[in-house]
Length: 364
Image (spheres, rainbow, N blue to C red):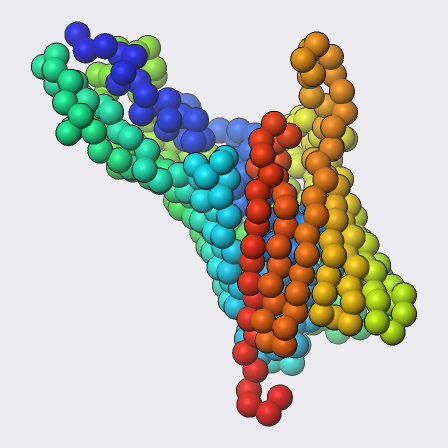
């Protein structure tokens, strides 16, 4: 019999990457499709993702589609890349938005979270002989595709928006999943520059249909190592509501200051957050942005407030600070953030860069 400890390596990697290995027909696990909650844009990361009320560019397609109506440019394009877990994982974002009419806007967004080059050692041993030439590689990749639309309401300062999203998750040839969900949002801005936002993600509950494919030899490995053979299943992502309030102040002719607070309300049970019950959890986070002549921006934020155990196994409160910079050069905006994208206090911070370009008709 081949040693199960060696062949189990790939199976453990698949499990750690978040595959649903339950045999039940339906499940609603915590953190389902959690890669869609990481965020996009270095501006947001620098402000601890506290942007749902103040966002008004192409990234609104992800954060709050209702904010797209504030876009003044004909076309905006944004791209972001970052490494997570010391370079093990790659996280990418691409967004395109356009004004379709004076009071309406359309956006397409894509996020990709992937771990590439994972060794597949299932065939490392054949007939009792180790052969490293039989080791192959596979990728575990999650994709999210958003099509967003925003419309100005008849009420002054009020706008509505929504997104239809397709989720595709894949782990080599072992497992694939397709899912579909809907987001809805609203934004209201007062004359004195107060901004309020309501963002409801997965309002219809997002469905991920998982399909597994294993050879007879791979099924045998599961059984030899005491693992349950995965079966096709349906994973559900429950709704999440984000509330936001922001205020922008003109300190002088050259300096501005914006502050925003958000509250994420999850409905998938008790999480390790500041506010929690057995049914819902509330995660507040705060961000600020200081601007100079609409060219240079300095940002900061606080989030991920939770209790963890220290080395003495005693509970203590922790929080995650973030900082960022922004530089706007005519049609190009460069943003940088130093942030822990994984929201894990035990991991190192990541350097996040994003770029946004605008395209307008000649003479504008």
